[in-house]
Image (cartoon, rainbow, N blue to C red; front, side):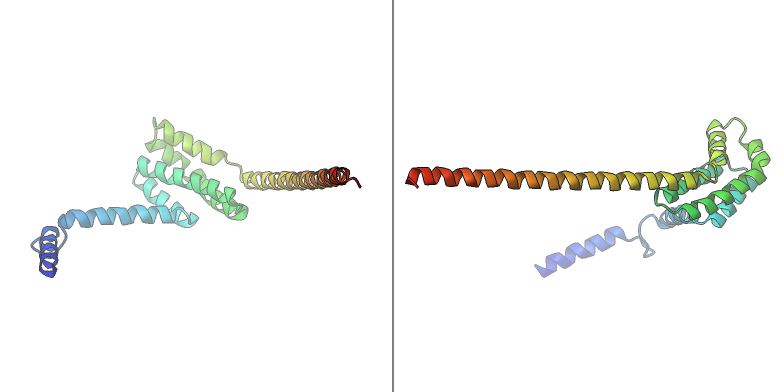
Length: 187
């Protein structure tokens, strides 16, 4: 049994290994890994406003509309995520840096993105987010919290009323059962 197992392992090792000892695909596998790492790095950098601005600067310098669009979309999503998590001050600081970059580079972005309606819409959307939108989100959160507290209080009152009514009904049922038993016993 062990010989069969070792033979299968040996065949598998030979199948998955190229002559030079690397996995099949060699350089292709390495380039895919490098591209994946680069994409992960961009995703991670979006969480840091300075890194995002740096990446945007590189995209603008290269007149890369696709990269600019991607970074601005990710920045917009990250701002919304921060607001949803209640990290209002972080959202404000991040938004201010991104909006400042757009204001400083708006003409250059417009030059190489002419006709790209999607990118123009994203730039307009990011510019249009009021810095105080974070405060609006915080107020909305407070309103939701107050509504939740009110609903919880009403639910508690309803539960208490239902419990009291159930106790009253149970007491009546016990009294009726006792009366019925006394009546049958002739007491």
